[in-house]
Structure formats: structure tokens, C-alpha cells
Image (cartoon, rainbow, N blue to C red):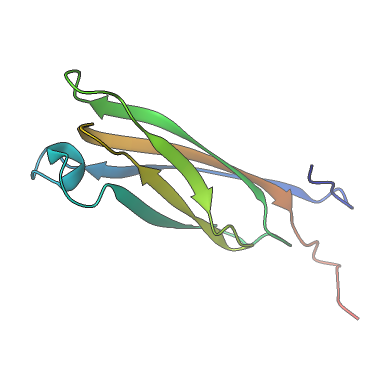
Length: 115
């Protein structure tokens, strides 16, 4: 549980098309090659410390003839950003995917200062 010491809570949100591999025969669509994608996200304004980040799929275009295997997570969360990690494996073929994310955390107040 993240306990906040002050009332300066910020929420940042975004949406990102991770890939569209069906157009150019990319690895996620062909089912061959590297099946992990990492995409960096920078916050518009920094947090006072690393926030809690939630990622979720908001669009998934996937081949119906194969098993549906998808793993998505946030990695390397810092006060200025994080990395979205999307993975699939086996015979799964994914044409495209979009992710939405939300970050919750404390921000500095303009009157805060370090001693």
C-alpha cells in the first residue's frame, strides 16, 4: 500500500498504440521472432517519488485461429516515467494492441523545500 504523507496527490493518464504489425508483417503478427515489446513513457510532469502505475489493454486485435496469450505490465517505474512491457508467446498472432495507463502518486508543492 502506498501511503501519502501529504495532500498533494496527482493522477496522470495516457493511451498508446503499442504496435500495428499486421500492416507490415511484423513479429507479433507472424508469430516468429522476438515476442516482447518495451515502450518507454515519460510523465508530462514529475512525481515526488515513483508513483503506482496501472496498465491495461484498451484494444487488442488478435487472430481467432490461435491461442490468446498476452502479458502486459509496467516496469522500471521512476518519478519521471516507466516502461510498458507487452509479451506474447507460442502460436499467438496479434495484429495490433493499444494500452491505457494511469499513474497515481505524490507531487511536490511549490512551497516544499529540502533542507
